Amino acid sequence: MAGHSKWKTIKHRKAAADAKRGKLWSKVSRNIIVAAKSGGGDPSSNLALRYAIDKAKEANMPADTIEKAIKKGTGELGANQFVPAVYEGYGPGGVAFIVDALTDNPNRTAPEIKKIFERAGGNMGATNCVSWNFSTKGVFTISAQDVTEDALMEIALEAGADDVKRDGETFEVTCDVPAYEAVKQALAARKIPTQGAEITKIPGTTVKVDDPEIGGRVLKLMEAFEDHDDVQNVYSNFDISEEVMARIES
Image (tube, rainbow, N blue to C red; front, side):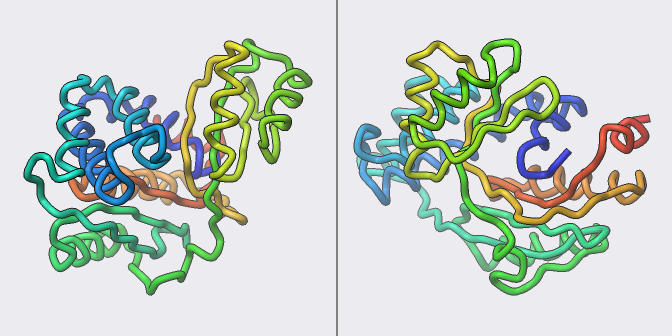
């Protein structure tokens, strides 16, 4: 299980995600506000806003709440001023972490993120201490029951995707960010459902975690970051096998 795309699966197993809908809506709202502020309130001409709205819909956020967040971003309604911040460092076992945040007070958030790193036995580093190993990509996860590999390969590559790989019972389609919308529309046009569609950071090299104790600490650190109100996304390069995951969960 590589950290860049399998964390959602782990979260569902641990039943930690959906119980925090209110916090999730708050985070998604911030993302919409910042996207609308930087690129305008029209999702047809603002890819970042369109992506943020898609994530809000996935979180079952009501349409009027989405619209209110857009208006806050464009200045029609008052809103706090959120700024993006990126924190990098290492966790247990030398696993790399990138933490994307939106904060209204960087002087508060940075020490808090640093403390989370340190409590887990890790340390926060300087800018680019780990991000050099990550590339930003669009990633689509599709059940192998819904399409053949040959058909998916043809559709995805024609739309501009980089690669299609099989991982167990799923396919993973990757693309550069500019091709994300075209690949998404191509899959929708052929009525191919996606289990996941996101713009994420993929590590060039991963760290294999064979020790269940270390693996458990890595997953707890992921959860601690995601539980922070200012954190939008967490990326890591851990690679935990199914066998080790089973030992962690037991």
